[in-house]
Amino acid sequence: MIIDGQTSAHLNPEGVTYLRNNEMKEEVKAESISQMIKHNELSDTELWRLIRQRVICFGGNSQLRIYGTLNCRSGKRMKKENRVFFASEQEALVRGYRPCGNCMYKEYKNYKYGSL
Image 1 (cartoon, rainbow, N blue to C red):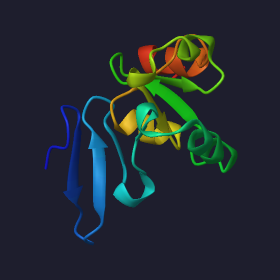
Image 2 (cartoon, helix red, strand yellow):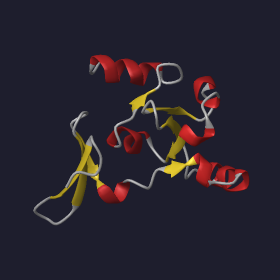
Image 3 (cartoon, one colour):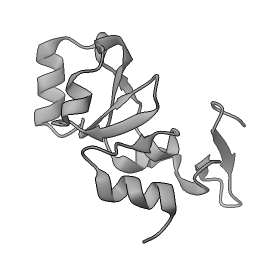
Image 4 (tube, helix red, strand yellow):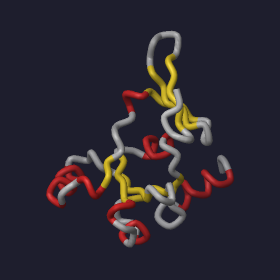
């Protein structure tokens, strides 16, 4: 089953659902992936509560398909309606986002050129 342009889901023989990022050739259990959270659907108090509880650990730009740390200066400049949040790097990668070249330089180089 295709979820979006780059992510597909399938069952393995044991009946566990897996998500596969077709571009990254990475596969993870679906239950380990939480729902991507859009910034414009949260109030400021809800956002800070989720950050303090570590439900939100990374931010991304839904238009550019880039994710990075919450304190990245590039991420702070993006429009609220384009900002999304992730619980983990793995979640962002499976959804087809790439690491930010500004705040996650090492991960970006690894993404771009393969394993270093």
